[in-house]
Image 1: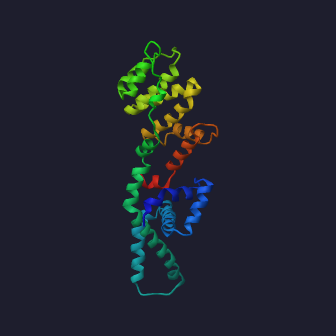
Image 2: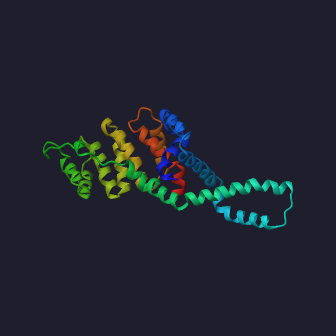
Image 3: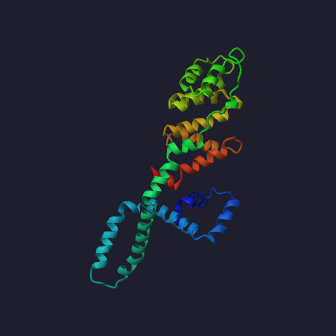
Length: 261
């Protein structure tokens, strides 16, 4: 069974994040695609294993019931009632073995902080950097350094732009990108937050989204400020990055995220 082929669709369907048209097509496919049905069953049973903590206690319980099975049979109501639980635990053990190493590795590759950041972050496109001479555009030296991937030079330049300069918000936005790509996460967060406070329409929402991604890159997805901002963006119907924020939230709350940690 090719679990990886169906994994992401199954999760979207189970979490209710799949668009209505895709959901209808998915349910229609369930009727004819055995592998898809099996993957859905594995996913649901795997969630039970994680949520009920069966994995940690599984070996001890199975050994105990195995010992019970070798004793002289006594047909009591208590003994009869153990059978469904034994079958359930055996099925759960099978799920752990089937998903096991493969699932943990796959989840780590696709749902880790590093993977989520790489999948969402986009460097500023060259077309967004206004080309001109330094005399015509005071931020041009920083733009050129950023475009040429001279990130430390870009960071150093944008840090020199003072708050009283007209394009300060823009400089802070690109300072955030420079610092983020260098792994200077505290500086990147400060820069994006400063840009947001300037409330300049062209950069404010983009700065909010990239601030979220900075927290992800820094491995700070449990940070209270991160969670509050994520909730604000994913629930804001007018925000330019609402869909991206909803997708990020879905991955952070994912079953695969939990087993990949």
